Image 1: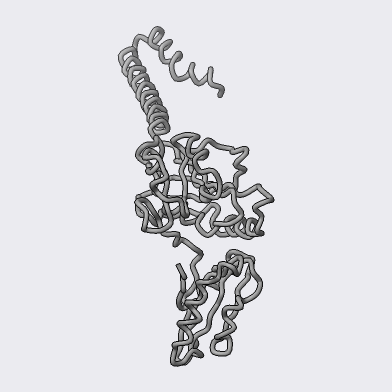
Image 2: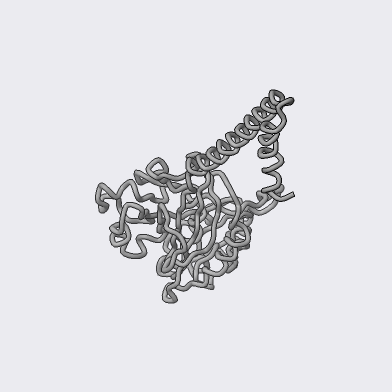
Length: 313
């Protein structure tokens, strides 16, 4: 039965019977009235349902969009923490922080290449992209790790653009682009900043007015330390040994230990492939090794096995 025939049987035929069948007139009138009431009620329900769907779609705020840029081929260790902790003015944006999407845009400058780009990109795509987490800063926002973007040709317009290597470039030019530009600063003194910019920057240590601690890394089981095991102390590698004077504090401290053989020193990263000559005075007392693992995830796994860190700052 097609729609026209159905309409005839449901409406026109009963109406015709009203005119032709006077004996059952009152019964038919009641039947038609009931039929019209049912049809009207169904139409009302459907229209209200459609209206509610449209209203819900209209009332549902869009997801907040944040791009994290790193135009230098280093500082990858702070990108994940920037996504999870950077203080953002969610209340100023007409979007849902409970559905925040964080994309990343990585260096395209060969002059900055230190061969760290591909390992970190692989880590992001394998372990983070598509995952959803509550922000560790505790601001109620939920992060959905998005995709790797090209900062010269973004596929979206973002509520915020956060540069994680701002003071490796002209951060003033970056910040002057607009109120949606934010910076991670590594060493720029706060008095240098215009007052109106202070709320759009964050440092990486608590000596500054706005900061977060870059502590979001891959998780591994903690190292087990048994009796008579060597205590594994790790320290940051450096790029050039004319800057290694801080290592003298290590050699001086090791020399005063009653049993230097109870520890081992692990030099983590740095571009230099050799152990600083400064350690020649203690290399007969303590085991000293280097970790030059290029894979970001494996490097973090190696670091997770340290029993203690010597920041030397």
